[in-house]
Image (cartoon, rainbow, N blue to C red; front, side, top):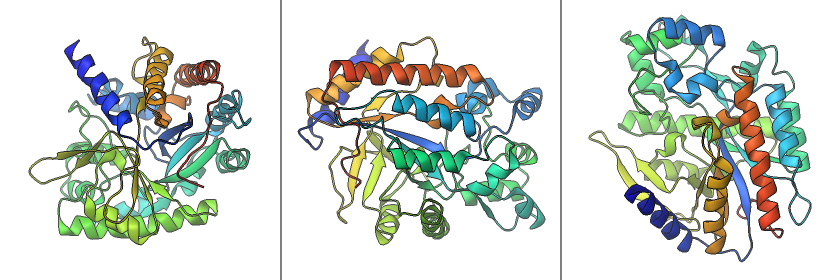
Length: 366
C-alpha cells in the first residue's frame, strides 16, 4: 500500500511539472521493433532443457521478430479508434535497425563485431516478407511512426569479451543465434548485454558513437527520413551519448520517468520530465503511462492505463504510453498477441469515450 501511494505521488509530480500543451494528447512509444529476441519455440525448448528459466522472462517467452500478421493486426487495432480529427491511434515504432551478424562474427573467431540490417534478418523467416511494406503503409495512414532505438540492442564490447572468453550463457545463446537469454539473474540489462548505449570505458564511448552514427544512417536509408528522437536501450545512457545524438540532429530524447546513468561502480538515477531540456537544447519526453499486458494477463490493464491517463490529463500533460513490442507478438504464442491487441483496442475505445477531444498525435515531432 505504501509503495502504491509513493508511486502515485511520483506520477503526480512527473505530470505536474511536465510541459503543458493545452490539449489532451495521447500516443504510444513501443520499443524493440526489428530486434532479434527468441528465435523460435524449438530454440526456446532447447534452452529450457539446458536449464535456463526462459518462462520467467516475458521477452524470452513471447517476443520474436515481428511478422506480417503482427504488424497487420496492430495496424487494424490502431485504425479502429480515431481521435477528434479522425486520426488513428499513433504508435511510435522505436526501431533497432540491425542485429548481430552471427556468421561473420564466428568466422572472425570472435575478434570482430559485424552488424546485419534488420531488413536482412527478416529474410531468415518465411512470415516477414511484407513487414516493411505494412509499416510504410502505416506511416502513410498515420498509425505508425518509426524512430531510432539503436543500431543494435546489444552492448557490443561486453558481449564480444564474453564470447571471446567462452562465457557459458553468452556461448549458449550464440549457438542458437541469440545474444541475450535470461539466466535467472532477474532483469539485469548489463548482465544480459541489453544496455547497448551504456558507457563504462572510453572504448565503450568510441564503439557506441560509431554505432549511433551508422545506425542513424541505416534508419534514414530504410525509411526515407531522419529520426528526430531516440530512446536508449534499457533507459541507460549518459551525457556523452546525448552529445553524440546532438551531433546527428536528434533533438528529442525519449525517457522513462528515471534515466539510468551507468557507472563502473554502480548506476545512478536522474528523474526526467516532459519538456525539460539539456544544455544542448535537446528535449526529454517522459513515458507516464505503463501499459504492458504481457507482463501479467490477470491484471486489468485497461483500468490501470485509464487511471494513469486521467492523471496526465488532469495536469494538462501529454499521455505517453510505454508499451513494448512483446505485447503484440504472436508467432511464439498467438494468445499473447490476441490479449495485447484486445487490451489496446479497449483502452483506446475507453479513452475516446471519456475524452472525445483526445488527439492521437506526437506534439514534438512534425
